[in-house]
Length: 241
Image 1: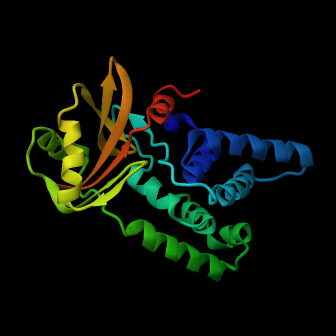
Image 2 (image 1 turned 135 degrees about the vertical axis):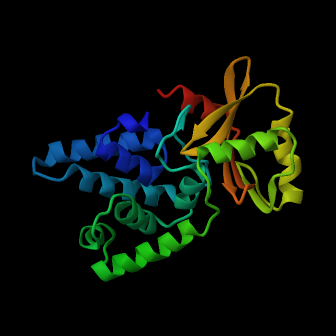
């Protein structure tokens, strides 16, 4: 899905982490350019609109982001990255996405967040430290899938410090996560998927997806689990409007 989008839609998606909001941001940016009649870089206006949306969203509660789900490899951010981005301030997220993901120079980033280039660098450095301070898979999809399959077979492959994050819970430690994660092992119908570039699973009922899970694998153990269990959210991911 995302692989077919143009640069501006990819930018908005990585800024906002929600498909519908990203589409709205691009449309609003195009409307602004048409209204002013002045030549503007669409990506710059998309970034400004996205920043405004992020600042408004900061008042709301936590909601799991929208990952890209596919059967094969994809190069979009996983749930771990998207969740880490959601924890940033709006200015931090804009600086990180523009500089680290789209290689925009700080001279271009600075005016958008009202900083000098040095100030923008400092904002980006804080964001990068926070985003990188999370478990990251150290093997490719095949290696990840092997560990996930072992977990589903009942093997003890949870890292002692494993974390579990969903809409309603945030747990740390194998003793806390294990009983919750075991629900997957007993689910009647579970299919493999790639969730934002990481090995994942889709739980279905009567052929309809009802839950989505992704795994971060490090040193042959599951270091983090992210789950979307809200059925309406899962439905939207598989049936985008």
